[in-house]
Length: 95
Image (cartoon, rainbow, N blue to C red; front, side):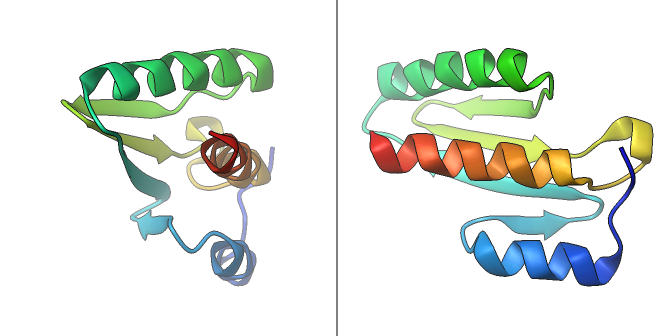
């Protein structure tokens, strides 16, 4: 997978308003009612990661889950990162 250029990253970010650019990674924090809700989300994200063969960094803080996406092999962001972000947003919107 090829690393995206800055213009491509900006265009993708325009569609993903809840995500931010942190260095060479995408990041978003999700908030839930409680720890159980956060863990249920992490379980679903784990299934999605396996399905897409793209694994985010996950930080859990009680009812908050922060996902960080980057493609290490490309040393930056690729279309896979944005596809995963879109899929995650779709899951959250459906819940």
